[in-house]
Length: 135
Image 1 (cartoon, one colour):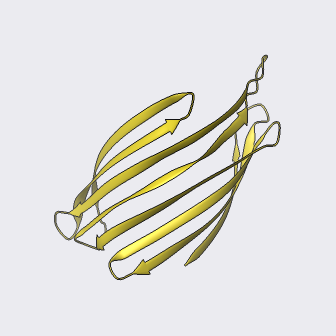
Image 2 (tube, helix red, strand yellow):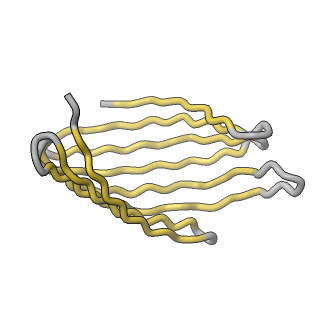
């Protein structure tokens, strides 16, 4: 399956961004592979950047899904202020998740993600959720 998406995000004082994303998803047995590539442009300044990611997950609906992936790209934007700041950096990071159904109608999701904004900072995140399916 192939995907195509376009977005425009609006901020304050004339700041906005446009994103064009292409992606693909491939199902093979109990495994799902996916990948995407985004072309970004932020305004003011018409600053271009690209980002992308890929992932794989394995499992069965109503039982469990386990998976992970990697994403990254170029962070690029200008700030709108009395002293404009031109930001250019790269970012990348892996992520892992487990989704487990406890019954047919609810379950839990646990996620871990790491992000390295090169020359700026690094972050680790752990997330736990409970989900419910409604008819």
